[in-house]
Length: 318
Image (tube, rainbow, N blue to C red; front, side, top):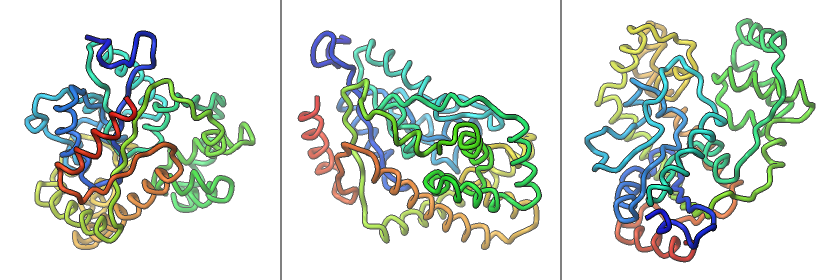
């Protein structure tokens, strides 16, 4: 019954969250937890929403989901935009639906802004658009390169610049636009949010020695290549997905495009992908450090030990 996932009638809905940097082992753990807790998994990954982008996003195949419902996977075409506000809206509705079914909503992922926006009910900036300003910034990026545009953001909003990849031109322009229109940085707007959750939320974080995590990242990249990452990017381009599409700026895709276009060797592209993924993990960890109320556990412990610790944490929260 729906009441099973509430402390008492009228209390806040429960929400379980599992976060951690890429390649740390969230997927396997999430499946075991979901089965033991009667949970439905909501992907908290900004790239898994895109259809046809499976290997590069480490998307769990349907046949490996063990019958556990997974949400917010394969809901957009690669050229469609998807934002934190879109995620928040969809996730909020899903949490209500899952709770009404008597199951536990369980967000699993590593996109910090997306997850935090749901956990704490962020209000996103309502600054209106300035199309002329956007076009001016796009021309600047086209003329001087995305790194130069990223440097402009770094000068006015270093926190947002650290969070955003230099190739994420669309979000960089939006952050510049918010500052242009309001005089307030996007990071300051987010930092000023009230940290009051609309849910009875329990956030579990997976931690690991940085050097060991980086080795896991390199192993994952090698596995993605064996699984056909290059062919996946090639197929997306063949079907007409533009190299400038937001989704194609994701890890694994933007590094392989120059190889497929003859501008870089495969070895160079792989080395860049490994470097970029390490840097991405570092940005994820930086974001998580600023989040409140995370219960950290060591990812390298055996599965039984992790489950024991997590169930103890959940028992103390729920």
